[in-house]
Amino acid sequence: MKALYPGSFDPLTLGHLDLIERGASLVDELVVAVLQNPGKSPAFSLEQRLRQITASTEHLGNVSVISFDGLTVACAKEQGTRLILRGLRAMSDFEYELQIAHTNRSLAPEFETVFLTTSAHYSFLSSSVVKEVARFGGAVDHMVPRVVAEDLARFFNSAFAPPSR
Image 1 (cartoon, rainbow, N blue to C red):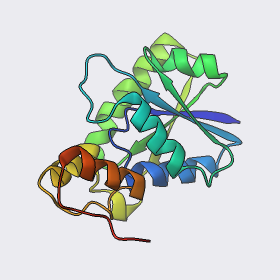
Image 2 (cartoon, one colour; image 1 turned 180 degrees about the horizontal axis):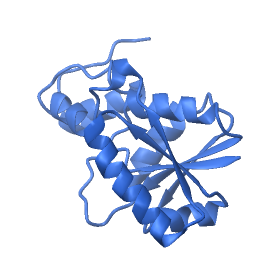
Image 3 (tube, helix red, strand yellow; image 1 turned 180 degrees about the vertical axis):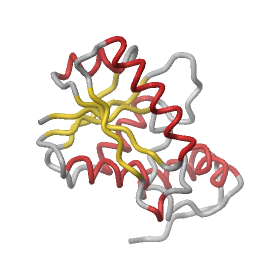
Image 4 (cartoon, rainbow, N blue to C red; image 1 turned 120 degrees about the vertical axis):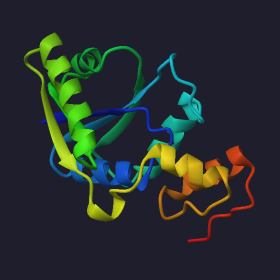
């Protein structure tokens, strides 16, 4: 079975990576689909986000990373899957994600959305929170993969330097 995990991933957090790892353990192939949304102004370019995710998932042999624009269901059809993976941190996420899942089903009734709850220790994470912490020079190495922490430090020109691992 193949699944699609769509998102903007601006930036990829350890919460996203946790869902990717757990999702990959449930399916034969997981496609991480990075949305190129012309209506948003992301901190990182599409190419940077693709590079960050590819580097962060290289240990997962059944994960591929692509970009897409437009509807998630169109991307899923193009990838040959009917299964969409989404993550939930809190009840507030559920309301939004349920609306999106119902919208996708209205567009393509054969599609299913599977929700995975975020691991408790990542439940506070969001890309917005990470960017806010990084913007003010706070340490984000416990929130994002190393490659993302390095890119955030450069992006915000902060004094933060991720520790060597």
